[in-house]
Each structure stands twice: as C-alpha cells, then as structure tokens.
Amino acid sequence: MKKNNLRIKGLNIGIVITVLLAILGILSRGSTYYLQTNYYPENADKITNYTVAYSDNSVVKCTDAYISQDSEIIFVFEALDRGKTNVDIHLSTGYPNGERSEWNYHSELEVWFFDLILDRNLGSFSGYDIAIYAIVFMLLLTIIITAWEFVECRMRGDFSHLMIACGSVAIFTFVLLLFTLYKLLNNVVKTFHDFVRIVSDIGYYTLILLFIPMLLMSGFLIISNIWLIRHEGKRPINGLGIFFGILWMSGTIIALNPFDILSPLNLPNFVSRSAVYILCYFECLFISTVICSYLAVKYHTLYDRDYIIILGCGIRKDGTLTPLLRGRVDSALTFEKKQFKSTGKHAVFVPSGGQGPDEVISESEAMTRYLTDKNIPSEQILNEDKSTSTYENLLFSKKVIESQCENIKKKKIAFSTTNYHVLRGYILSAKIGYHAKGISSPTKTYFFPNAYIREFIGLLVDQWYVHLVNGVGIVGFFLLLNQLS
Image (cartoon, rainbow, N blue to C red):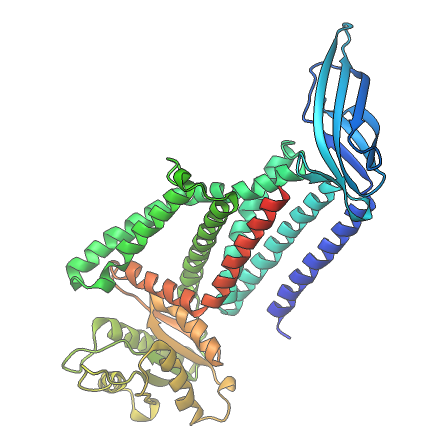
C-alpha cells in the first residue's frame, strides 16, 4: 500500500475517531449546561439574588449562578426530562459601595436525547466547548497531513490531482485555523453560534486576503492577453485570459457584496455563504495549481531515462517545426546529451503526434526529421504518429514503447513539453498507467498566462465530478450551519 494512501486514510480515521470522542465527551456533559449571558456588570463582586421562571418546570432546573473570572454572569442548568421550556431570569447584582443593579434575561432551552441541553436563543448546547476543541484539532490534523503529503509528492516527483488537492486544502485550512485561534485566544468565542459565525465569515476574510493577489493576477492576465493578441492575432482562444480575469474579479466583487448588489435578490444566508466558499475553493485550487505547476517545472528529473516522449503541438505548413515544438525537441535533446555525458546511457526518443487536416506530414515525422538533422541515429527514434491530443500522445506512446519491452513499468520514462504543460503531462501519464517525469521547455512570456489558464480549465474538466461533489458538499455544509445557528 502506498504511503500517501496510508496518510490520507490515517487522516480520515483520525477525523472519525475525533468525532466519536467528541460525541462521547459532549454526551458525558450533556446534562449540565453553562448559560453564558454576555452580561458583564462592571465592578460587581457578587450575585445578591436571582429568580428563574419556566414555562415547563419539568424540563430543566437552574442549580447555580456565579460571576466568571472575566466578570460574565453564568447560570448553570441541569436536565430533568426531554422537552422545551422558556426560561426567564431576573437577577440582582451587588457592588462594593452597596449599590445594586437589576437585569432580565430570556432564553429557550430544549433537552434532547441523552439529556443534551440545547440553547435555542444562543445556538449553543451543553459541551459545546468540546465540539470546538475537536474541530480545532481536526483542522490542525488536516493541515499536518495535507502539508506532509504535499511535500512528499514534491519529493517523489508525483505531481498529481492529489498534490493539488492537498495544497488547496492546506492553504484554506491554515487560514481558517489561524483566524479561529485568534478569536479563541481573544475570548471572542462564547457559544457554538459564535464559532459557527467565525467559520461562516472566514470565507469573506479569505477573499479579502486574496483580493490584492488575485487583482494583480487578473490584471497581468488581461495585459498579457492584449500582448498575445497583438503578436498572435485576434482569435477567441487568445482572449481567454481577458475573459477569465474580468470574470474572476467580477465574481469576487459580487461575492463580497460591498455595495449591497445582491440585497434586492433577498437570497437566503446559506446561499451567499456557499457562493463565497465555492469561490474560495476555486481560488485556493488555482493557487495550489500554480504552485504545483511551478514545482513540476523546477523538478530535476534524474539522468536515468530509457525513453523520452516528445509531445506534439502542431507544425508549420511546410512541415517544419514551430518555435514551440522545436523548443520541446531541443529540451529533449539537451537532456539526453547531459544524461549520456553523466551516465553513459542513451535514451530512445519517442516523437509523438499525428497528422492534422492542415498538415503536410505528421508531427512525429517532422520531429523525426529534425532529430535526424541533429545526428540522432534512426535506431534511437521510435515514432508514434496516430495521436491527436495530449492524452493520446501519452497513451499511444505507451503502446509503442510496450511493443519494444515486456513491462513499461520497469522502464524509466520522461516526457518533454512546454513549461505550462508539464503538470498536465504528469497527471495524464499517471492516469494512463505509468509514472513519467517531465522535461520542460520555455515559452514566450506573453503566451504563458493564457496557455496556463487553458491548462487549469483542462485540469478542472478532467476532475469535474470531484469538483461537483465538493460544491454540493459546501452548499450542504452551510445549509446545516444555517439550521444549527
């Protein structure tokens, strides 16, 4: 069993155990509820008198009242029987100078199963502090495991959907934990409802925190696309960055709703909260993808490869290589020469790409001619000339390599492609069934952002069902919080 599977399973098991222990702890304290009134009588030193009236005397009973260390009035209730009751409290407090003050408080308490007391007024319950500490521990555990897995993926050169997911979860959970600890340490969390509100608000704070970086990124996308259109022509695909930048910033502004744009719609609270979190989800996913893509490009593939697949990307009308494709072939050649110089081992080139309707020869043949011109012998070239996409490049190349060897998993494979495309190459090769390592070639600055957006969208489409489930889960989570609060 792979270590990463063990870690993720360990995280799931740890969360389940924590939840179970929290439930047991809550149930063990369920019959006693400490009602925090948020009433802080200044300089009061004692409670001189209090009365508690119930609409139903058989549900709960007040057993004590005291002033806490931070000067808050606390009432202690014990469960008697299942049911609901309105509680009206009248309180007198005394001061050292002999003065007294009067105060009234109303709440609705309900006793659930196992004598668990629910405070309908505050949205809290007996043992709520155990639930909060359990959630904080689960957040910390999630950060440790996902960050650990992210680093391990980087060390193994396993750039995958798992690595992207771990990175995005670690980023958001870290922000959530920091904000929660700040509130807890500053004694802001008085009830479970306070904690729910913090969790609900963290989406807004995350959007605000990421607003400037995303604004700069969107601006860079728009500028680079204008640059791209000036050099490469006015094609819809060349305006993708402009569309993405405007859409992203518009969505952020609408989600933050600084000018009450959504007020006339009168949307339920959980809808707006869900929209904010879904946007945060994709922002963290995008940031994690950018980081993973950068690390994939910078990853040093060992000089021990048996085969180097060169991914095709279109040729000129005369059958020669475009600068983009020539860069991929040159990077493969440079890597192979360094490998032979350092280890004495040659690698077989697998130029991969079929013939498009507007191409005079296949991309594979064009690359083969280029390799031959660079004095690469024919026995060191293995053609794959049927593929029409990146997925087929890697799939059909696998079949071609398997025609020469018994087990491709025993062979060490590399693929050469443009820098923005490396991460996708890692993911697709693993999906097909072999773990190839990437060799990257540079591209023009103005071309990279637009191409990268296309790659990011491609990665989203590749796992659309996962993101759909996560989106539904986010909506369901806030619907549940809305009911609890």
